[in-house]
Length: 156
Image (cartoon, rainbow, N blue to C red):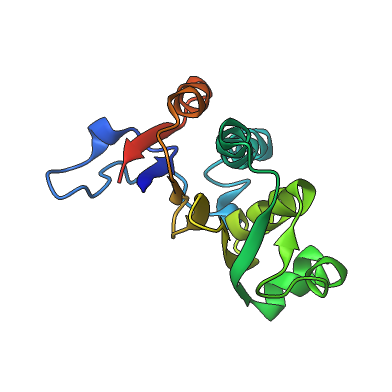
């Protein structure tokens, strides 16, 4: 399996242990309006979401399965997404549009989820805008397209 960490963080700003050193960098949706403008946030969020579909397109994957789902009730209420999330359950096949919405909600700290397609593809998220993608074959075209947006694709 090939695996990458996709982030907005330049690897040149890491110490020898891999810790990111730029403390001025925004790391959370709650920082919109203070550390990041809404416009810059939306652009970055879109780049992350498009990174998922870019890999899927290269692999010929058109749906994923929900493998794990955690929800934070206060955030679900504040984002008004209860109707959408009430239709989600572990094991459910997820369409491309639903993948985009789940990724957005994860990046905004409303939920946490893992998505996959058998042994072909997976995506899950860590804290502070770290996204992990794995595939059953190398995906050089997807990586180049994602890096062209300004995101970093690091072997992981």
